[in-house]
Image (tube, helix red, strand yellow):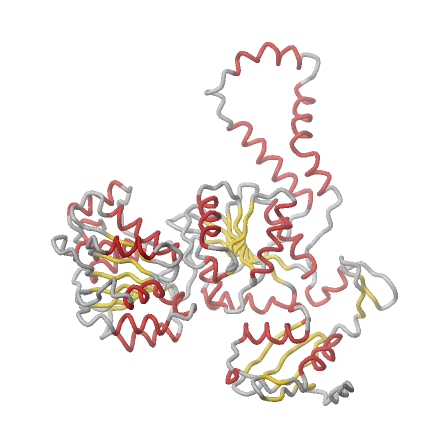
Amino acid sequence: MTFEALGIRQDLLASIWDLGFTEPTPIQEKAIPILLSGTRDFVGLAQTGTGKTAAFGLPLLQLADAGRKVPQSLVVCPTRELCMQISQDMARYTKRAQGLYTVAVYGGASIGEQIRELRKGPQIVVATPGRLIDLIERKAIQLDEITHVVLDEADEMLNMGFREDIEFILQNTPCRHSAWLFSATMPTEVRQVSRRFMSSPAEVSIGRVNAANANIDHQYFICHSVNRYATLKRAIDFNPGIYGIIFTRTKADAQTITESLIREGYDIESLHGDLTQQQRDKVMGRFREKSLQLLIATDVAARGIDVTGITHVINYELPDDPEVYTHRSGRTGRAGRSGVCLSLITPRETHRIRQIERMIDNRLHRMDIPGGKDVCRKQFFHFIDRMLAADISHGDYETYLPTLREKFAPVDKEEILQRVAALEFDRFLQYYENAADLNVRDERRAHRDTPRSAAGQYTDTRGRRFDLAQNQMRKLFVNLGTRDGFYKASFLQFILDMSDLKKEVLGRIDMKDMNSWIEIDASVAEKMIRALDGKKFKGRRIRMNDAESGVPRPPKRQK
């Protein structure tokens, strides 16, 4: 199948041929013939990096009337980065086409400059929801003549809380001929939007809904929580050519890990919600230029990132929502390239691997955490390969050869190689010389891998002692649930903030409308009960106690 056979006109064909596009991707092959009709609502389900921008961008450009200098098509997407990326791609598609103009409008940039660009009469506007509504309220853009609306990364926009904005936009495009919705996953919220605003949409799904990219190798390490940072370093060092994104749950984790890795000499920066737009643009610029080897990001901060060539995605912790795993892993393995998605998990989280496997319809492979010698060997051979591949054609090295021969005359070849290795790797080899085995050999008896101390006790890598007899889970009841406005992630953060405990002490959380049940390490269960029981939440008294054994609540402290 060719783009020409899909019905793309000649000037657009010339532009995409210049870009090296020869054959359409599966989503392009199935979507473009439907969208070129211009009158059919459409739902396209495909992972990021599968060519969705061209799938809707080329039909939009072909349907646009170059002679009319008014917005005719609207592309709505979740983030500034994706907005800019789509606009740049559209400009590339119209390199050989005359009179077609695309404008991107997004937050964090001068709204005055964007209004001036809109006055030039673009046929296509690419926008983030918030900035678009701001422009509508200022009467700087009219949607009266919009005939086609594209919702790109619809699931991401709804996850970010843009549902009301999206509904407002769709309600205010009265001349809309069709709406095209593209999404990597199909949660209930996306389905509801399609049912409410679309009429018998054509639906195209590339692979199973939520299924992961087949080019991605999904792997995981099992480690103790106290060894998570050390395991992350092993993963990075064992892949010397890595160019990747590390995902954390919180911006505090992102910043802390970044600072630690920078101190140890890694080329890395963090991307989180506390950065200004200028700082964010600077970090992303350095990452795209590959002057940064690694980027650490939270899920919110990473939304809309579209960077080619990413070799690895590392989940420092698994996301609370399994669907988020699909979005994270989709940052690698793009445009037909292969990639690796590696997750660091604790023994108590192994059951979540099965959940993810069922959701993405793919296998996650358990890998051994590399030993110190394995890491050194990998780094050494990577250095040798780089040295042998070094380009020596541009330097006047022959000038120095006589001096070099004189200097190295008394030294044999083997010693020269050893000295080169020592200069490059001495510190590295010393660091890993006596490196511990970080693997958890038996999850059911995981704590026995830690050093033994006093009878019945073990000491972890931070020197903290705990009793095996007490290292059991207790189940607590609390009269808070989803009706109180919580979802699992926010509820987790609430109880941890109230009790000043770490999330590693928690097991399964089962939330209902009015109540929840929490599995927690027995050694800290009483601390959590004391922290929450009797407190007030939105005027209601919190009740927390042991859900199974009938252990009485601890007495109230006297004021």
